[in-house]
Image (cartoon, rainbow, N blue to C red):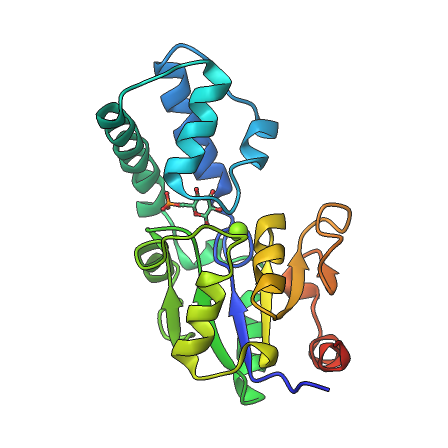
Length: 220
Ligand code: BG6
Ligand code: MG
């Protein structure tokens, strides 16, 4: 049995649902370049870095660009995305998240946020969650994308907790894989069919009980 000493939460798709804003902004860019993307295309963009998303989108549209243009396009999309982020309020925190974080904290379990997004700090501020976690590891400080375990290992190190004592909450398949690559247990937040490799899957954090969390201590 490995006691749970830390919970590491992904941000986009676990704490807030920003994927619609990413989608609208990427779609605007695609339209400007003369093609369209679908919501199914958007599924592939979850959990991966901005530049990686751009490469996928350009390949959908069959568009090739210079390295300089790549950065310009990514920057343009990000400015549009930030217009949406500016409108965010605490109402956009997904149901049950604040209550679950409170339970966790009261149980003496440490909290980190691990997000591929370079905008994570801004989003957490907009939705009023800045004082709910001890450590934030985001796209500004990690270079290796999930499923590489870097982001979760760094979160654990900054909290001073061994990986075996950490539970990761993730909505992306690559994130669940990253947690396992880090030697951590995982909770998939979302669709059971998609996140089947996770140790436990819940539809939302609000549906997760403290008993279920503590039961994860018994997983090898
Ligand atoms: C992840 C999202 O959290 O952050 C991805 O799931 C996104 O869809 C990535 O591409 C990078 O986000 P940002 O805000 O740095 O462009
Ligand atoms: Mg996510």
